[in-house]
Length: 374
Image (cartoon, rainbow, N blue to C red):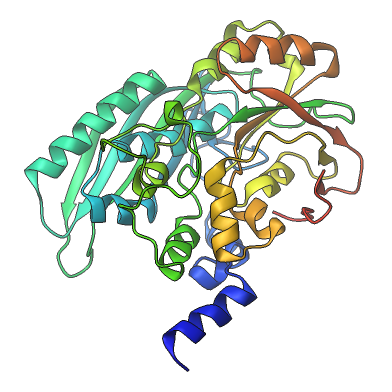
């Protein structure tokens, strides 16, 4: 079969994340196997460093006197492959920071410090300087201290630069947000994303490859330049759209938790919409469900990915944030007040749905988008 015919056949069937190399269900099973093989902490209950049981898994908590310390670790993923091809590094430190601190917010923690890990086939002072500048900007946005890091040269093991990190946060005992207080009728407030963020890039790269596009091409869809952090002159390129940094939500979410218009007890759950898309909501409660009746607008790049890859609606919402990067569940009595408060600090926040008793699943205004497991 000629290449053109093969491509046409693949596109007719449609692309998906698993076929692009990342199987979310398989990853979940692997993580479950890893966790199941781990032993319990040797730290005695109640002593500094002892683990705290926490549903959801967005961040880990340990005892620390009258407070808890929160930890999260993550990397940028295959978005780095695009940065390598274009030699553009200004956003990747922000991506790395965001993927970690945004998870800490979900347990009610204030991020305070960060350490990075860079693995390279060969050190490059120019690239490292660009990464340093990006991490410095990330610390400013997240309001954290860069407390250290490590660079490893791994020729023969690493073929392209890889960047990951770990964030440290804190919260007072009794102020943790676990989802335990969620109840039917709680209102969901969506916070807009800045784009694809740092999930689903194996599928993004597969789509770009199959449709014959180049990262240097002008974006073939309308883009609001105000939300894109440019590194070229002229028309916005696909590379600029897909390297746009992940949004960091510390401002305003930390302020909402600590000094917002409602008591912390009325914030019942926070979800970082990362890999797994809207199915992440199911991590917050064992029995309740979620109905997204008024989703935030879908950004143009997601529509383009779907059209070019013939990707199903469910697969898109399972892989990407689709324009909504964080969801906060609050008591219905304070929903309008909280939404207005957030909207004054971040354009585009809106009420998108509610917590429901529907048998522990996510439903959506699009009937094809239903999730019954994470």
